[in-house]
Length: 92
Image (cartoon, rainbow, N blue to C red):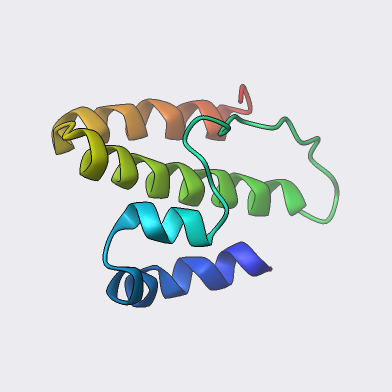
């Protein structure tokens, strides 16, 4: 899956594109257009993959926000924890 490949390469991409914002642009992700898409779980476990993808993308976007708007890391960690819980509970 493409996003899992991205996850492995985030550090490499960060080195290449210098800022998380550029990495996000490369990944065609936009803070403004990011929203959760509800996916129905199926017997092949794709739901887990979509959850991992959501969390990965969200982390990426939080990094962008930190970088661009100077929001503190602990605020971000808090947001991440809440979002993680929401994604995992299936209420995304």
